[in-house]
Length: 157
Image (tube, rainbow, N blue to C red; front, side, top):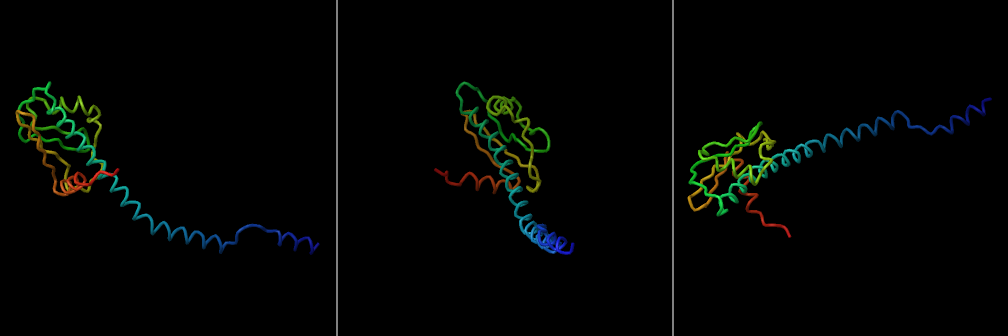
């Protein structure tokens, strides 16, 4: 009977409590090291999405203004602002910017602010001449620096 009991003990193929505690400790250390890096990448992704969304709306206005079929009137100081709801368009007396967004960026009403780390809502202030020339300035300062840096990056082949 004693031999049978000893044989069972030798065939035990499980982990000991000490081994399990060591594995859990190693996993906890890895998570503690990697979690801050993960949050940085998530925030970078959110900022990139905000810049891309606002840039897409500005490009829609630029294409609309460049099209000879659209008789766009002079616009000074119109703004497009990303926020928690639908993007706000102000200073667009003739509705040209809203028309441009509706035609060339049909999903613009669903574009919302992803990152809260800009120091304010990202805005694009648009000026359009009667000839269709478009100039854009971005705000707040953090966003302007970020988007201007993105625009000056060389294209990757």
